[in-house]
Image (cartoon, rainbow, N blue to C red; front, side, top):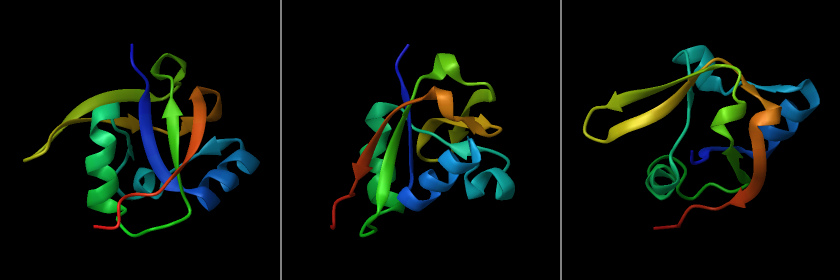
Length: 103
C-alpha cells in the first residue's frame, strides 16, 4: 500500500507533537481530515495553499492509522482519502517542508 499525505502549517504540526495527536481544523468543521494520494499533492498544494509559506507535508503510513480512513468523491475532482478522526502521530513516517508554486 502506498502512503498518504497531508499539508499543514508547521506551527500546527509542532502543536500536535506537543499534544501527542493531530487534529486539523477540518476535523471540527467538516468531520474529517483531508488527505491526498501522492499524485494529488501538487493539485491540492496549488489549489489551496499557493503563495503560503511555513508549510509541511506529512507522509502517513495508512497501515498505522487508528482513525477510520474513507475515500470520498469530491465533485469535479475525483476521489480523495479522508480521515474520520484525529491523526495518531505514530502513523506519520516523514515530515518535509512544503512550498507550493507561486503561480
